[in-house]
Image 1 (cartoon, rainbow, N blue to C red):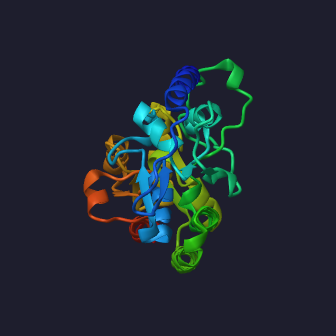
Image 2: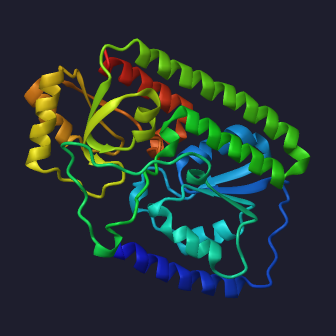
Length: 319
C-alpha cells in the first residue's frame, strides 16, 4: 500500500535521527541481570514469557485493545527495539516498517527473529464468496501476499516457540538450561493442544466453518483439513462486505446446515448478526490471539487458554 511505503520512508529518516543522537551511548547494564525481549504482538510475547520466565524482561509493542493491522511504531518503540537483546516480529507486509529500523544506522537489537521465517507460509487466498480487498497499487498486483497468522496452527506455534527458546539460549548462555527445560515443558503443552484439536476434528460431523468476518485461521484450517467460507481474507482492511458476500454466506449456512457463525476479536459482529438472523445460526467468537483486550491481558489469558476456548467453540460449530 502507498501509505505503508510513506510510513516506511518516514521511519527510515526517524531511525537515522535516533541512531545519530544515540551514537556512542552504550546499552545500559541490566542491574537485574535479565535480558530484554521486545515483541510486536501477543503470541511471541506469550511464548517468550512461558519460556524465559524470571530470566527475561519481555514487552509487547502492541498495546492491549489495539487493532494490530493499524499499528505504527512510536519513536519510543523504535528506541526499545534498538536497545533489545532480542526483537521478535511477524515478518509480513504489516511489518514493512521493521526492515527500515533494522537496516538504519548502527544501533540495532542484538538479535532479531521473524516468526514467518521459521515456518512454511502460505499465500493469502480469496475463496468463493469473499469480498476481495481493493488493490491500492497497480504495481503490487503480481506480488505474493502471504498470510501472516502463522501461529493459529498449534504445530506452527510449537515451531515458533522452539525457535524463541534457541534464540534465548544463544543470547543468554548462563541460563540455557532454564530456557531448555521451560521450552521443552511448553512444547509438550502445545503438543497436547494440537492433539485436542485433532480429536475434535476427527470426530466432527461437519468440516466446514463460516466466518462473518476476516479469516485469520488459514493455518489452523490447513493443518486439520477444514474448509471455510468468510467475508474477507485474513489481512483485509475492508470492513463492509458486498451484498453478494452476505447473501452467499447466508445461502451456505442454510445449504450446509451450519450451526455456528464465527466472528473474531474486536469485531462489531454486524455481519454475523445479519446472517444469524436470516438462518437461525448461533454467533460465536474465534480469537486469533493477535492481541488482547486490557481486561483479558490483566486477567492472565495465554495463547493456550485462548486456543482452548476456541476449541470449545469450534467443537460446537462442527457438531
